[in-house]
Length: 214
Ligand SMILES: NC(=O)C1=CN([C@@H]2O[C@H](COP(=O)(O)OP(=O)(O)OC[C@H]3O[C@@H](n4cnc5c(N)ncnc54)[C@H](OP(=O)(O)O)[C@@H]3O)[C@@H](O)[C@H]2O)[C@H](O)CC1
Ligand SMILES: [K+]
Image (cartoon, rainbow, N blue to C red; front, side, top):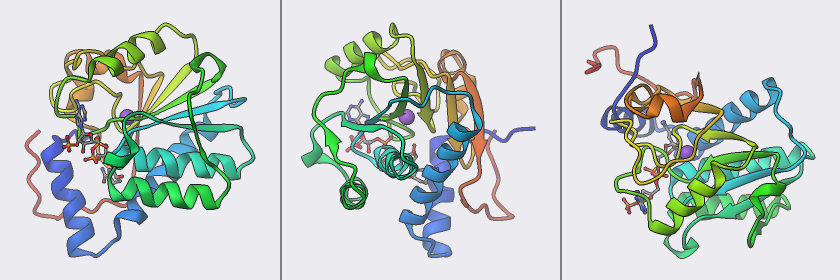
């Protein structure tokens, strides 16, 4: 039986892993990237040109690390930031520096139609409001293009706890849940937007005494 969690529970377990066991956040980000790379490698996706849509939080950091790994595999990868990079978390800037050192630089404006595979690394469990208008338009437009979308942790626009669409959401062919799947992926529209749900262990530790609420 798959254990689903709330975002609060996921944050508690992430903190437990990073603070009690001193496992650096970069390790979790790298393992998240490797996990999604494995799902991509195991699937039958068209990898001719991969567009990674990157947000300003740790979901975005996961996406940049993944883009770097795919680039190092020799694949054609474009990184496109969604939002003002100046407002990004330190983890995003760190991953961007590493990616640049590895020869992968962010693109200005990518044409979604050129991408044969889109990686959704815009929002994950940190989504806390309806998407900004511009992003809602982008998600609705992207949903009409016939290419596969792989969502990192949660489909952007889906409330990770309730499964509601927050203005608009990007429909995924596959969602790679990190650690534990979030309860929103099996409620309301979450189930429809997440597509095939793959749960990947990325080394998040759980206390024996932890009481899951679900
Ligand atoms: N599960 C794990 O062990 C790990 C998960 N990781 C990844 O981290 C994300 C969660 O990262 P987080 O930085 O908390 O949040 P997001 O990246 O989802 O969101 C980015 C920030 O965007 C802001 N935000 C939220 N909603 C909106 C909105 N509607 N409009 C504009 N901006 C929004 C919010 O910032 P605030 O300042 O507004 O709070 C978010 O912080 C998780 O999903 C995993 O992918 C780790 O990388 C690895 C371990
Ligand atoms: K996402």
